Length: 176
Length: 461
Image: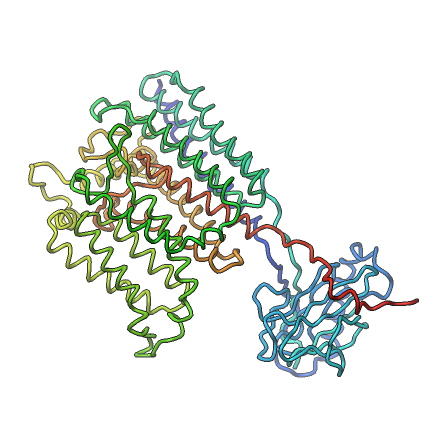
């Protein structure tokens, strides 16, 4: 066997071996799952009221995101909420797109929104759509209760748009 | 409170990745076939006659395993099976390549192919019959007794090359029970620590920044330590005792999140190793070889450690090419099992050795990833324990061969010649696949709860 063939085979084999490693790493990369967290522009943690310009910018970003989600929401009724927003508490500013899935809230690490709140139970509440697409909030037997406006929940209750759901120090709203 | 973090959370489901696995498997079967042809061309100037049979055999094994994974663990991790197949295939080629050297004794590759077939059969058996890994939790203390029995058994059989790690069954051959004990004892540790971890983690006093556990909680770790030292003394097997003690410390750390366990573990194992290596002649000799590799051995030859160093050096970065190295010169006891990495290093060079080590790293990473994704604490501990045991074994062998730690008689998983090792590691991968299937399975759609029906809100529009 000629020297050249053997050299080509030797380097070729190493190349193929490394190609396998690289492909395997690519598979791992495409295999990440769980929740995707996107940081949006306009991070301000100072608690100062923002200049209107910046607020507009953020509104524009939010609007752009809404437009992107539009095709998925076509089948929903008009006036149906498209996202869940954490308005107060340590997670303030977090939004979750409503795509017909059940959203679980609590301290348990597999909840959709993991509450880092002393007054929250590990499986505190869930928010889910009923057959007509109306969103319902249900308390899952929490210790300190879930409040819709001022009323403590005892039964699964439909959530109106913009009504505050209180869990400990966290306030959650459904928005368009 | 201002909108300090503006984040959007969307959930992405874990897709079923079986087609990716199939593509990778085809790749993983073709690479060893290429290597096989390469060895034949280099050694005999011809494509080896068994190429087709060998390729079809490996392909058939991988194909059957893949089909059964598709049927019984459809959401399992897509990478573990291809990586294990590739490593096993490469091991077969390397053993066949060393069989071509008449000075290294009789051919081992056909036997190894048979053991690999048995290994894949056990893999399939575990996937088919172990429907849920939590069943293993019921056998916590039975596994402890079984593991003890497996570990103690070799004491009653004659040692081979100074280490008593074998059980000889007349007419069948010899078994290394330590390889199976590795899996069984992980089941015990996972079940035990799941129950005891709160006591171990919470009941402790703080002293100089370290959490000191209570005396009675320290009991188990001391028992395991004494036990692994006894293995070291009576079986003169450094690798197995390091594996068991290290495995226990890893699982203890994962279960309790207390760094102090790692500190204790390192102190205890260092102390134990120093004491035993100063009194036990076999271990002492290994340590001396490691500290002074270039000194001549008592029989006038070079030490095995030095010979593997020469092999790595002669390989350089890109290696000498498969079939063109001088691994036959490694006059050690086991060039096909303990020193197979030296052949990899010489014939594939640093580049090839790194690729092989990365394959092991990827397999271990998938195991750790499975532990992270698992939902139940027992599954988490079991997955981290199994991948930890695998990682420790790779570290002990690779570290020993490359001269980082004293050499011990363990086998490189999948790559090295040895029936028990290949069978046990296929079973290990099967359990990891079972856990990852459970972990990655999408949650069932929530059933409407029956007690909600009477209080259902009826909207009249």
